Length: 144
Image (tube, rainbow, N blue to C red; front, side, top):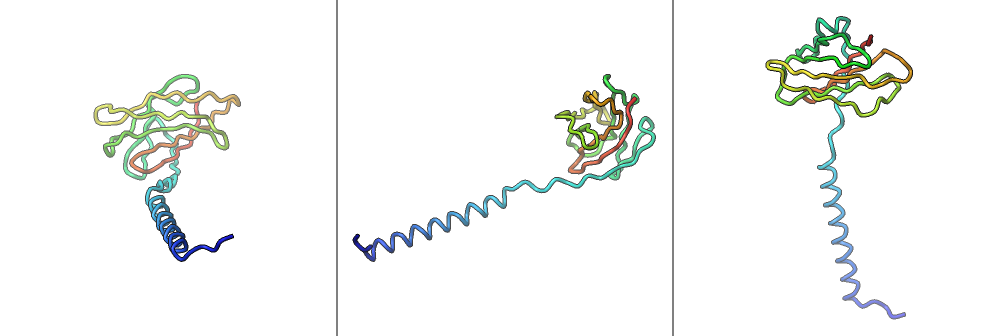
């Protein structure tokens, strides 16, 4: 086997340097493009859903009709920010599938007509995750 010439060694060294620079550039780009961590979930206690629940940002969430299983009901949210909020329903330790509802402009407030996902256990204890302006508010409630 023939030994590599000086020129061949220089070419290999240059190729390794280019590879290392490309690797550093790709890692740097990846770290800049990563999604920021999801915001923390803030639990909100609310005993009077139909009268309204004050959220930490000053907005008020209200269940226009009492929350019911297997039939639609309306949520309203006092208007904060310009981006439409969304709501998701789940149960403790139970994935209820994808069920995100987007609020629509209701003239001075946001509103959404929602239906709770079907629950095979018959449980009525629900969690509402409200996504609004980069915050997530979790409200526990019981449906009738």
